[in-house]
Image (cartoon, rainbow, N blue to C red):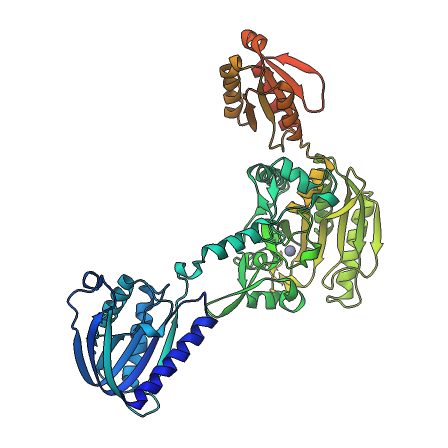
Length: 592
Ligand SMILES: [Zn+2]
C-alpha cells in the first residue's frame, strides 16, 4: 500500500471516531470519496456468516481505473431515505473530478455504529442502480478484503461526506437505561401538597380526576375527561350567550409568519414572551394573541357601514412565555384558551357597544354567582399613539358608560396601553380574593397598522374603531378560580359528576344497572357503584367526588320501581319515580 493510502486510512479513523463521539444520538451516513488512478480489491474471507443469503452473487474481486472510490459505512438509523442524498453527493463529486467510473466500496471501519447488514446491502444496491449512467463497480459486502489504490494528488481527490438523517424514527432509539432515566424525570412531577390548601384546584383536580400537570409541558394543562367536560360546558354556555348578543365566531391559525407580528408591533414589544419556530427558512411565531389573525380575516372582504358593528369572537389557544417560577396550576399558565372577541364599530356606536359588553360581563358572572368587586379604568399613558381628540372621546365614552351603568370604578391614571384606554373587571370569590378577569380595551393602533377600513354612507372610506374584549379572560384561569370558589361543588349544568347510582346489596344489581342505563341514555354524567362494599364507603367516595345526587336502590325501591335520592350536602332522602327525577334534573340544568 502506498504511503498516501496509509495516511488516508488514519485520517478516516480519527475523523470517524471524532464524529461518533460528538453526535452520539444523531445518525450520519459517512463516506470517504477518493479520486484514484486505480484500485484493485479482493475478498479474503467472510466477515458475515450469512453473507450469501443477504448478498448473493457478489463479484469477489475487481479493479477500476481513473475512478472515484466511494467508501461507505451504512450506520444504525440510515434508511432508504439516505439513498437520494448519497447518490446526489457522488454524482456531484464525479462531475467535479470529471470521472464516469465509480467504485462503491463497503468500508465498515468508517463507523462504530453500523446498521443492519440487510439494510446496508439494500442501500448499496439501490445506490448503484440510481448512479446510472455512471459505470459502477461494487466491491463485495460482508468480507474481509485487501485493496490497493493510488489516490491522485489534487485538492478534490480526498473528500469525506456525512449525511445527517433527519426525521428518522430510529434516531431517538435509546438504551433501556437511558429511557428509564428520562421516564423517571418525566414521572417525577408530583405536586407538593403540604403548602397548599385543601380546596386548591390542583388538589381538587386530583381527587375529582379533572386535570393534571407535568413538568414536560410547563404551564400547560393535561385535561382529563371530567375536566374537559367542564371546560366544554363553559365554552358551550359562552357560545350560547354570544350568539344571543350578535357575535359570530372564527378560528385563526396557531403559527403565523414573523412578518405579521412585525406589522402588528408584537415583534418589537412582545417578542420575549413569544415561542418562535421556523419552517422552510421562514421565522414563525406561535400566537400569543388572536388579534393579528383576526385582522387578516377582516381584510378578506370589503366592509361597509351596514356591516358594523361587527362582533367577532375567537376561543383561541395562545402561548405566552412566563417564568416557570410564577406558574401555578390553572391560575397562571403558558398555554391557555382566551375567550377573545374583536368589535369593529363606528364612533357613533362605540358607547352602545361598550355598554353591551358590560351587560354581557355582568350577566355571565351572575350565572356563576361570582360578584364583580370593582372596575378599573386605565387612561392615556405618556407614550401613546392617536390624536388627543380620539383619546378624549375614548376615555369620555368609557367613563360615561361606567357612570350610566352605576358601576363602582377607580381610575388608574396613565395606566392605559399606548394604543388605547381600557376597563378591567375584578371579581371576588368565596374566599374574598379578587381576580382580574374581564377586560375591554380600545385599540387605535391595529386598525391603522393593518389599514382596516369600511365604506361610509356617503361612499367615503373610514377606519373602524376597534375593541378587544375578554369575559372569562383565560378559560383555564377562570376555571381554577371558580373551582376553588365552589370548592369543587359544581352546579348540575357544569358538573362532570352529576349522579352516582349505588346498590344496597348484590340482589338489586340488575335494577340499579337499568336505572344507570336510563340516566346515561338521557345524557347525564352518571356513574354506578354496584360493588359489594358498605354503603358508608360508597357514599363517602361519591361525596369526595362531589356528586350532585346520590341515588340508592335497595329491595324496597326495586319492588316499588322507585329510587332513593339524596342531594349533595343534604341529609334528606326522597323516594321518587325515575321519570320525575329526570324531569327535575333537566329543569335544574335548564335554569343553570
Ligand atoms: Zn385582540
